[in-house]
Every structure is written in structure tokens, then in C-alpha cells.
Amino acid sequence: MPGSISDIQGDIFYIENRAPYIMDSGHVHGHVELNYLLGCSATYIVNGREQHIPENRLAIFWANTPHRLVALGEKKQGEGILYNLYIPLPEFLQWPLTEQLRQEVMAGFIALAKSDHDYLVMRLSRWYEDFKSDHPELKEIILGELALLLKKISLQGWDHPESFFPGVQFEESPSVTDQMSANFGSARLKGAHHVSTMIHFIGENLHRPISTADVAAHLGLHKNYTTNLFTSVMGVSIKQYLQFQRLQKAQLLLMDSERPIADIGYACGFSSLSRFYEAFQRYFGMPPGQFRKKLL
Image (cartoon, rainbow, N blue to C red; front, side, top):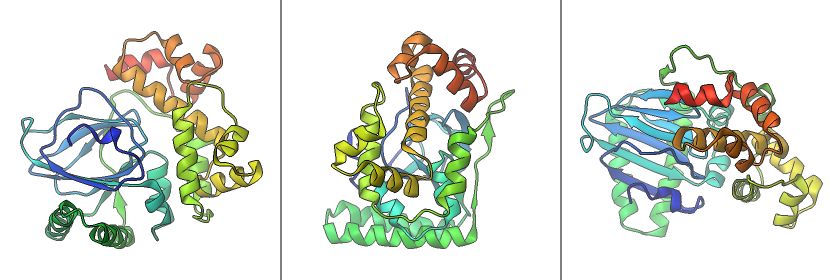
């Protein structure tokens, strides 16, 4: 189903094995995504950063961050193989992984596993064949084996892909990314399905004013419980996460449309243009217009 994964619900586990292709536009979906490239490398734009993913290295990132494959190294489109594994967020949040990996993935970064080509290709090939059988118990076994594999890789350590963005130094918002990293280590990963529902509700309502009370009411939970649960799992408050996602949506629209900047700010739920500019400058280290010019 090339290109259609954005239409798949975020609570569905899915595996693809296909030739990689250059995307016309960026997209988002609710999964934690695993990529593995055979016979080619690729360059992505993820979270506003152009990043190179080498062949034969397992990459992991949260696909709720805008991402787009923009180049395929020395290969032509249609050459090489790309394994895509789409992990539902509730599953990922409950896996026994290191705190550092969770911090990096949930903060919008790509992590690369150490090279272990023969073993990984064997596992990926077997998982794909088992997945195609459409047997529910086999899918549960695949998810369990995936959790153990990521735990093993985490013990060996993760790398980060080389990042290219000439002349630009991104400033990561201390109110979002740093707190997400600092607080996640103490989080008790409970109620992951509730949090996943909160994330989906926020994503569907970025364009309008919403509050913590609105999120709690949607789930039928007490406001204080909702606030504490979200913060314990995600490492930031609902308010901070809401602004973070509005900025991600703005980034996506700036990359893939010619809409006026003011329209984008209001479409992403900012109450005024000044608030939009202030938040965007604080997170990306530049105003929206300069960000668009650099990417294009």
C-alpha cells in the first residue's frame, strides 16, 4: 500500500516491503516507524532537518513528526528495497526499552541501530512473510520479538544520522524538547492507550482552541488525572505538547504549500500572528518565512 499509510489508523500494526520512492510532500501518522534500506541510501526531511539514512542500518522515529523522503543517494527511483514497520504508539510506550531511546524518539529525532546486517535482514524477511499470512497470533509474536530486538539494540547504543542544513542552527525549544527528554526518564508508562487517544484528539483539533478540560471530557476522565497521566507518559504537559504539534503542522504547511504565512498560523490554531511568529522563532531559531526559503 505505498503512500497510503497515512490513511491507516494509528493503532494498526503494519509491515511494508517495497522499492523506496521520493515523496511529493511530507506526511504524518501516529505510528513509531522503523525503516531499513537494502541496496540504497536515502535522504529524509524529518522535523525540519535534512537527514541521511545509510543502507543496512535500522532507523527508528515517531511518524507523528512531519517527514518526507527527498532523495535516494546514487540509485534511481524504483531501485533498492525499503522495509517499513509501523508500530502503534501504545505498543511502543509499553515496551521495556531504555529511557534514552524513548526520549529521543518522542522528541522527534531519528535513531540508528548499530550495523548488524545479516541478522536484521533475516529477521525482517521472516517477519514480513509471517505478517503476510494475516494470522493474529503471528502478528503478536512479531511485536514481541520486535520489542526484544529494540531492547537488545538499546543496550549496544544508538547513533544519529548525519544532518544537513547549511548555514542554519536549529534551536530546540527548552519548553518542549528539553523537558520531554528531562522528564521522560521518571515517567511510569501506564495508560498508554489513553494517551494515544489524547494524542489523536489533539491532532484532529489543532485548528481550534482546545484545553486540557476538552481533552479530559473527550475521554470521560477527570481533568487532574488526564493532566498527570499525559505528563507522566509524554514528559510534557498537554499545553506544551499542543503547541509543539501546532508548530509541526505549520512546518508541514510551509514545506508543502504556498499558503500565506498568516493563513498557516491561524490554520494551526494560533490565536494571533505574533504568537505564531514568537513560538516558531523560539523552536526553529528563525521566522517562518526564512524557514520556508531554506527548505525550498
